[in-house]
Image 1 (cartoon, one colour):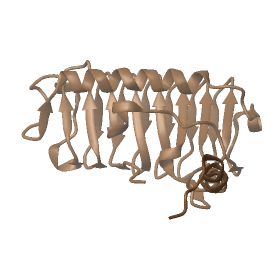
Image 2 (spheres, helix red, strand yellow):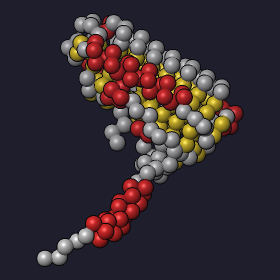
Image 3 (cartoon, one colour):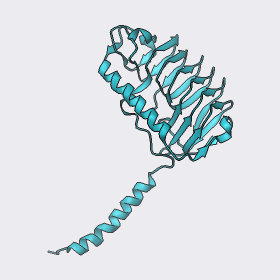
Image 4 (spheres, one colour):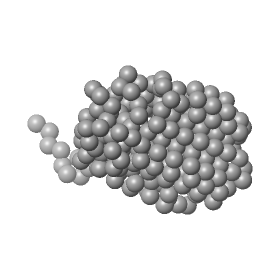
Length: 248
């Protein structure tokens, strides 16, 4: 029987450890560390002061409102493929589930995620386009604007499935009618976070990608589609929209 000494064992294991490290780095993406959404990450739409809707929207994923009464969640049951959570029994019937503790945890996680995203530094890109990003292709990184951001024409977010983006917007975020935010290179909506202090307005018949952490209202205009999450510290307004949680 051959006996392997401690020194021999270390020499044998070292190349394996290096190979494992290099393999791990091969899967490490570019951009800032991701934002942990906590329990808020199980919601497609989460609002603290209500969700209005012009029928018929199509929401894939869970929806919730807190601390506002369930009467302020105006989606119909047939518009939601997922769970509908409210703090009381006033939510839409028969689909609403009363779960104040779950919602309180999710709202707290949403606020924590917002503060985390807002506090990240240093920025890789400051005041890009003076707030006008229409027509640009956005690489992975941390972007910061001290004013509002406008998406007047199509924007491409390009990177790998492991890359990340955080957009810090001190003002409003406005996407023009028919403008599209699209993904390229394997980029995933779940890795894109829009932290917005002002109101978010997504124009008519537009398309949007990513997780919105909104300090105020998120308004989605008629016919617009979203692949991502709408997490608002005030209200969310919908008008015949398709909002789909990112699945990967």
